[in-house]
Image (cartoon, rainbow, N blue to C red; front, side, top):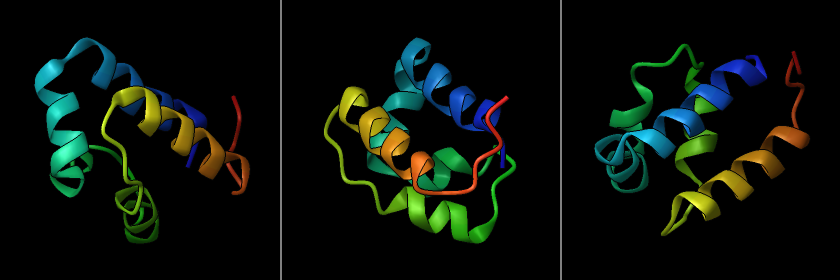
Length: 71
């Protein structure tokens, strides 16, 4: 996975309120449109956040602990 894919998830959530709501409340459905492995989806779905800011902080922390191709 690349940081570009994860950045796209956050970017979409910032500009699209509907996607943001889906990401926070039904993340598996929101993530289905992205090229993620089952393990990546599992790990991202485990993020518990009530705001996009919290989600982004936790996602960045998760990214820093994984082998992410920072472009």
